[in-house]
Image 1 (cartoon, rainbow, N blue to C red):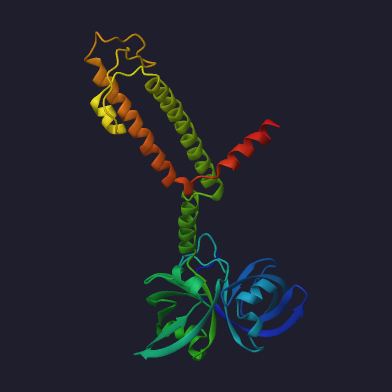
Image 2 (image 1 turned 180 degrees about the horizontal axis):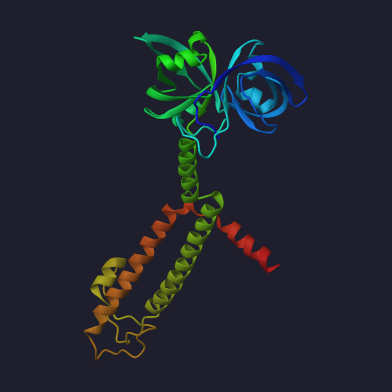
Amino acid sequence: MFTGIIESLGELHSCKTIPEGLQITIKSSFDALVLGESIAVNGTCLTVSAIDGMHFSAEASNETLRLTTLESVQVGTQLHLERALRASDRLGGHIVTGHIDGKAHLISATPVGQNAQLEFEIPNELAPFVAKKGSIALDGVSLTVNEVRQNRFEVMLVPYTLEHTCFKKLAQGGVVNVEVDILARYAARFIEATKLSNAQTPLTKAYHLHRARRVVCMVSLQMRRAFIAIAFSLFRGQMVGHPRLHRAFGRQPLVSRHTLALPHRPNLSDSHPRMRPHLLDQLLCHLRFAFAFRRVRQACAWQIAPRHSYVSRHRHRRH
């Protein structure tokens, strides 16, 4: 882990292509280097693999070369160097991991008094992680974002930063390594994971459609049984003629001396005339509900799986 405060300017001494990537040798003013320690080279975290006096060597993988500018650096070019942060050191910049996210291109450099205002352009996929007054690491230097416009942002460099970094030599169109704020990355990942956990997967959607179809089938079956029982009682002549009932069917009221006997009211006779309208009203409600439910089922049929798939699945289960 680093803090984005450059400790020294090194110089690229040599480059050597290896099967795993690139081996670079850098001249630096660091003393007491240890094999295996981490050093940020232009913001890229590299591991010291060899030490020879004032020179140390490190290896960059092909993935590192793809995301950074190390492959295009010429011998003799100055590089930003920073050793790993100790637990007792001051965090002068912001938390920098040395894991480069991409490259940024310099669009313009405008002098503002003794300061310099630089405008950079970054890939669109990195733009959401850059926020106004937030932190960003450019070539390993911790800077504050002043303005953000789509995939472009501006930073202000003070004279001390210009004097002790390589930005004073950066020309228009120059490329630098970019590492966005790690806190912004974790916040974006948390939001993404929350959305994924709340969203329905295709499997859960299929499960809910299957449950809805089963409910519709069961209710439809019960309504069919009730309708058949009521119709059977009606056409056997066991229902006393009622004006409301026969108006619903477009017929004249029929006078019958048969008793009114529904399945749930078996022993009801003509001695209870006040009960007949109540039961006939229930019959009308059942019929209306059955017709309304049929229309609702037809309207929702596009959301329900075909019937043959449900039957074939249960046949397969029985076999």
